[in-house]
Image 1 (tube, rainbow, N blue to C red):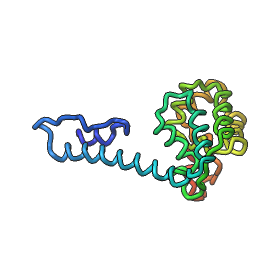
Image 2 (cartoon, helix red, strand yellow; image 1 turned 90 degrees about the vertical axis):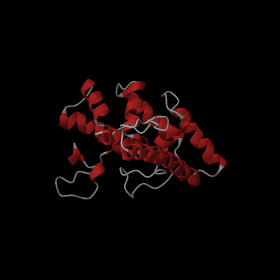
Image 3 (cartoon, rainbow, N blue to C red; image 1 turned 30 degrees about the vertical axis):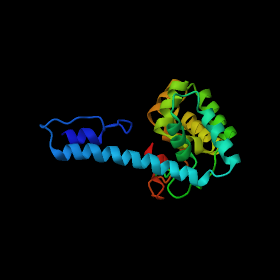
Length: 196
């Protein structure tokens, strides 16, 4: 039972300072150590992926500007890097599959999407939650996906205002849907309206 609790623990929990009593099995203690080590490896590996793409001073300054665009939220530098990395293909994300090419984000793109999301009555606290759940939103097309999908939700489903805000907090991936297979699978399930 404790093993299930460890597996369900949020990734930010560091278990290195946990002392295990004699009542717990060695396998549970090993699971805790393995979880902690794998989190450290993931963080190191994901940072290396970003460093492989951001090499020039121009890329560095663009990356830093995008970090600044996220400064309204209480994210650490590592969290900002992870959000931007997932959004722009620098960190592997199942959401994109193989279709997302790696690119250095532009401040105008990131800031434009954040401003649009704010215009949907999302507070900075709401945006913080949305970005943690669906960081890839920053890499979606503002006109072709976000605005179009919000219009679809309003016109076809009658979802707007407070209902739209609640939906976006519950299921922010709806902003990035760009496929409607209508039941005839196109193998792009992470971006398909059928999930809605």
